[in-house]
Image (cartoon, rainbow, N blue to C red; front, top):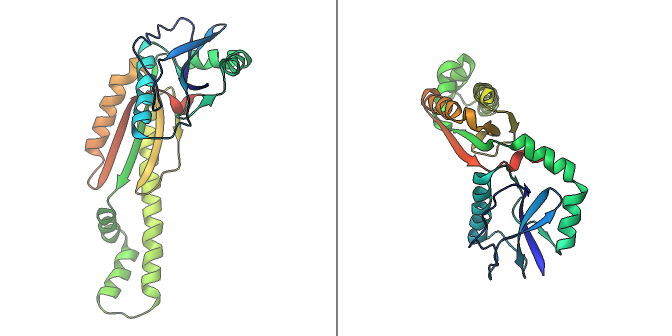
Length: 238
């Protein structure tokens, strides 16, 4: 029977897996596989695990439960191994790396920060503040039928949107990263212009949350600022 692997912990992690069951249509009890100073948290599965809501929820609940007990290396959803020997060999082969990661991530949690900007609000700002964009727009509104006008205005606005959002994203990152031990910036997908994660130590958590709340209030109209966390440190497992 295959094994679904949730996470890796050190041997001294309290675990406390009693009465916890795992993913799948016939959930099996959670258990551990030991190899030297490491433990892998697993459950038996007899089917291919797909990202259904129930199983995604269980996967995340297991990670959050383990994180409350100490450092954990969370595996991404869907990781399986054919048997216990495969898990034991993986733990043995990369033991030094796993232990170093557990030490590095100890006492930290991950936070995701995303931001999006209302297009209408941003457009009004550009037309109000950029003289060239305002002049082109006024020519169109006055009935100028120059066929190049819409293209020129569209290119100008697109460039201004990029410049302004890049500057805003850089400012937000600069304001929040001092509270983090590490951070990683991802490619944002529309409508977001910012998507990044921070590894925040527990002793900086309150200061970080206060700074984030202040930024959300001060950032201005038309910007939606979203924070998710504390989370298991998926983005920082090397």
